[in-house]
Image (cartoon, rainbow, N blue to C red):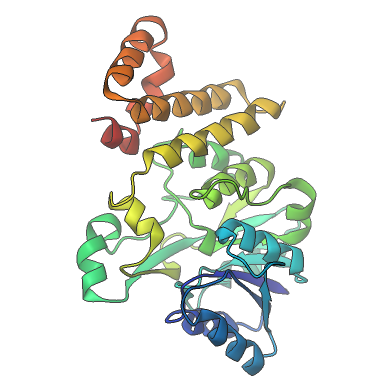
Amino acid sequence: MKISVITPVYNAEKYITQAVESALQFPEVWEIILVEDQSPDNALEVCKTLAEKYDRVKLFQHHDQGNHGAGASRNLGLEKATGDFIAFLDADDYYLPNRFDAEKELFKNPEVEGVYSAIGVHYYTEKAKAQNFSIFGDRLTTVYKKHSPKDVFRGQLGMNGSFGLFSIDALTIRKSSLDEKLSPMMKTHLRLHQDTEFLFRLSYYLDLYPGILDKAVANRGVHERNRITQVDSGKVKPSISKVMLWKEVKNWAETEENIPKEELLHIKRMHRSYEIANASFLKKWGMIAKYLIFDFKSIRSGLYNINFRKDLF
C-alpha cells in the first residue's frame, strides 16, 4: 500500500508536529501532504522544518499563498497526491498505532473502495475538557455495528437512527475510485460541513466497508480554539450552516438520476426543516402551521433530528 495522508494546516503551530509524526510511524504512508493555509501563527515555519527533516513530508500552499479554507486545502492535497490510497488527518488530531490495521487486510479485495473506523478524543488542556466534555465525553465517534456498503448512505443521512457516525480522520479511500466517481471533491463554498457533504456523496458513489469500530484508530484533538467545537457548543450558531449544507445536498440529489425516492424525500425534508429552524419567530411558526396542515411529512424528519429540535425550540 502507498497511502497519501492529506493535512490542511491553519493555526496549528502547537499540534502539527504531533500529527505528522503520528503518520510517519506507518511504512504504508507513502507521503504526508501538508497544505498550509495562510496561518496567523508560526505554523508555516514549523511545516517547513518538518518538510526539511522528513523526506515523506511535502509542503504546499495555495497559488496566491492565501487563506482558502480546509476544503480547498484538501482539494489541493488531492491534486498533489501520488499514492494509491488517500487518508486525511486534521492538523490538531493524530493517528494511533492501529490506524491502518483493517485497511491492510480489507483492501486486498478490489471491491473495497473505502474503509472507515472509529476515532476517540484527546483534550489538550483541562480548560478544553471543561468546555467540551459535554459534547464529546470520552466516547468513540463510530458506526455502532458492521453494515453492508449499500446501507452506509442511508446511515450517513440519518435515516437509520442507530447507525452512528464516522470521521474523515478514520477514512481511507482507494484513489482510483475517488478520481473516477467523485468530482468535485470538497465543495469550497461551504465554510462549514464541507467534510459532511463530501461523506454523503462518497457513501453514495463508493462501496465503503467497516474497519475497526470498537477501538479508536485516531484521536480528535480538542482545544479551546477548535472551530467545530465552537459550533457544537453553541458559541457559533449552526442553523445557517446546516441550511446551506442540506440545500447543497438537495441540489446534488435532485440532479442525480438514481437517488432512491425515499432518500430524496428525506433530504428535501431535512433541508426544509432547517429552513424552518432558521426563520424568524413569526415566519417559523407560520411555516410549521402550513406544513402541519398540508404536508406534515415535510417536517417530520427534522422533528426527529436532535440538532433541529435544539435550534427550533
